[in-house]
Length: 335
Ligand SMILES: *[C@@H]1O[C@H](CO)[C@@H](O)[C@H](O)[C@H]1NC(C)=O
Ligand SMILES: *[C@@H]1O[C@H](CO)[C@@H](O)[C@H](O)[C@H]1NC(C)=O
Ligand SMILES: *[C@@H]1O[C@H](CO)[C@@H](O)[C@H](O)[C@H]1NC(C)=O
Ligand SMILES: *[C@@H]1O[C@H](CO)[C@@H](O)[C@H](O)[C@H]1NC(C)=O
Ligand SMILES: *[C@@H]1O[C@H](CO)[C@@H](O)[C@H](O)[C@H]1NC(C)=O
View 1 (cartoon, rainbow, N blue to C red):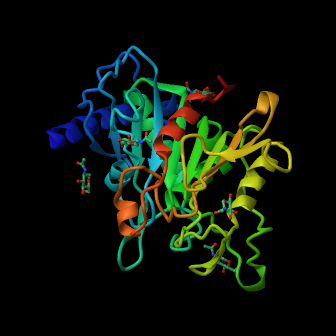
View 2 (view 1 turned 120 degrees about the vertical axis):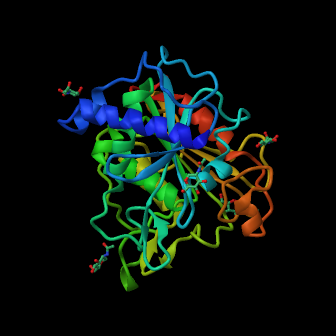
């Protein structure tokens, strides 16, 4: 089943690229609306781009090619895989998502262990352009599925959170993705020694929009990507509240959050910080996931992250909050 699906998807991609030999822009404009997608629904399927890079995707059971369908990109962490990310975010389960297509991109592989790492991580050569790869994936998917181009979203864990931030910070992708939700992100800056100042690091970030919706999650007990930041893998990580404040400043919001309080329905000191007011209400939000939450995708049921770190499950489901957040935004702004 999966193999024949992959074959069908490959044929469709091949047809799309043959029909549009002049390049990506025209593929981007090609629309899958009204076309039989020719792929299975409610099942994970691997696909390959003309460039040879791969990705995993999932089409919801109620997919209708006559209806523009929102899409979520979800990025795996360092050394992880698209399938493992789907096991973690559970965005292909009806509890969290019944009507969004989910695409799980796959990073390049580096080093002797051929580990998967995303652009901007210390393991990845400086000239790697994963943003271009993600846009190629979007173009391909838009050419054979009926995508709502105003409702494309990005999330991811750890280096996948970093890749989510790369997309928010790049003019090419921030012009096409409506909202961003990095979880336990590794926001490396190439600074060492005395230049590694987690509270004041400057970030390379050049979005195409002045209002980029960002929802950031981080655990207080993250022992991999420390909440307090500092040197790691030859580069430097920021103090997370500084990273959040830098987004608030970039989005033209005030110095501090308008609202701080316990995350509704959650325990363990999980705290919600909301930045922005009036037309920019809640444009930047941050959840301190709790004092006991380690380097994990917060969920109230054990997942591979909490098991791996021997950490208790969180007191809330990040996936629920992320879906609510995405639901509040289109590329045009707050709904
Ligand atoms: C594709 O869309 C872009 C932006 O909407 C437009 O500038 C470009 O001319 C279109 N290309 C084709 C081949 O229709
Ligand atoms: C996708 O491809 C990877 C690598 O070949 C494989 O390990 C994984 O099981 C595949 N996933 C699905 C859903 O077919
Ligand atoms: C980090 O900075 C050093 C010194 O400026 C440079 O040699 C190195 O290539 C940079 N690394 C990356 C990944 O950009
Ligand atoms: C609760 O969370 C904040 C961070 O938002 C932290 O600074 C504080 O120490 C925590 N308080 C307790 C009692 O754990
Ligand atoms: C969190 O999600 C799981 C399903 O993955 C569900 O069983 C559980 O009830 C949810 N917890 C809350 C507090 O909603």
